[in-house]
Image 1 (spheres, rainbow, N blue to C red):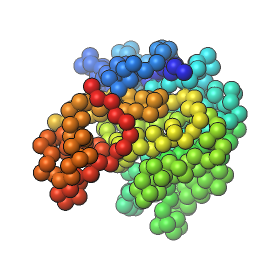
Image 2: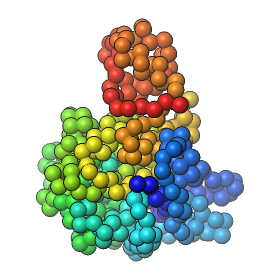
Image 3: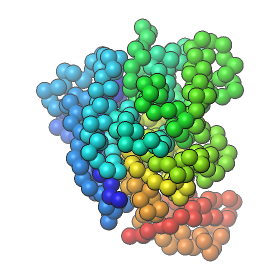
Length: 406
């Protein structure tokens, strides 16, 4: 079955850095590459059956491409008012209506809240529907609760790794936040509105899962965060957090996601690009944390595809077009290549790599010492990507999936 691809470049980010980049683009008359076009034009999806179904209309000031006339709207105050007034819900509904006529939707876009629109549309069609979210953060925390935690972190300045993100990742409000539907809370609202049952949601990869140290903190703001997080887990949300992935490896960890019902059901896969932030790519909204490596993303998805009978949709969200695909420290960021490979691996179980890696991978499979591999640059790149491992003078092949080369 073909993919029905569409874009939704919705970006109501209230952070100062995001706003500043948009303002600078307007002043300079520049704009970043369109993520939708960059993914669909990539070599990684060449030859796949993808139908271009256009884009969801987004008001200029809420998109990644604001127009000059809306420059005055680009303030943290305006975005904060929009978020607290439940503005993301309207765009969820736009996506829901857009998807109603699409078969096997493939959404490429910005704010993760839009995933809720696809879920709502597909739940109306399928009783055996399951949502699988790849994300370094758990987007099931109401805004007032997350705001409280950020306030605590800002006051105490603890080791942020215990919480999975830094206080600077979010805009803190000393007067509190409304319990609105948005990119950080959409799973909570989908469950509480009865759109999807908790036991039909699987979240793979969150770094912010409450640790034992965190559970011992007595501050009411931290306790509330832990209670909400663990409460949704008790309701039935399956959470395979980063500690499990690091301990077991992606293949064993993904097995924990696939219940007997999911094996025969219909799966929708939602990927927040920060699942690979810093480790695999830089083109994600949040880059203060380290996600999993590129090859580990593929290893998990390859086995997920194998173990589920039907993948009926996919989205690739939270793309940062100002960093995606640009050259960083002499290497071109691989965000769009990874997005393309995610589509390919969920389509046919294969990925695409540049031909320069072919010889190195073949040598690694037969020659085990670093000295025997001449192309050290490509080898180092493959190690960084997670396709190869280095232990002392010995090199090992870490990815056993099928690879296409140019």
